Image 1 (cartoon, rainbow, N blue to C red):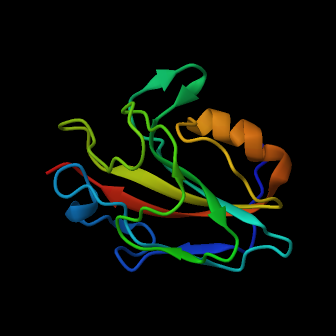
Image 2: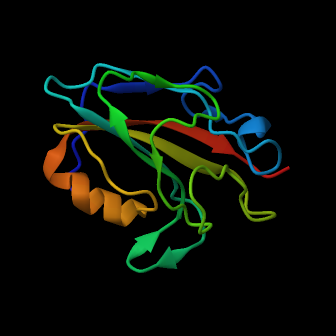
Length: 158
């Protein structure tokens, strides 16, 4: 995949960059996706996608590593934020085998994990069916990627 970091910036009112993700946004509690906001999308952006990935998860499968917690797409470029627990967009398949968001839950005694909440700016609107994996989504959007950036949060199982 083309790695197209840009001036796009991602933030959340739930946690600071490199800060602890609130328990309510994890599988230990309500398991709600955190609120996210972004600004500075590249000129020509017509669509948005969001991915949450934990590279610290002890999992290697099909050429990938870590654990995918969220795949969300078909978001319009006019959108610049998602509310907590959003139902906007089309959910993809997470590595739990379910549609939508599944929050942090590192294995017991596995220590602190980092969670990368990526926002991807695309040069086209998308109308993909629900249930795409992160890999399938990235294959589809790579030719349309104008820019991307992430917000990193942390969580350690209680």
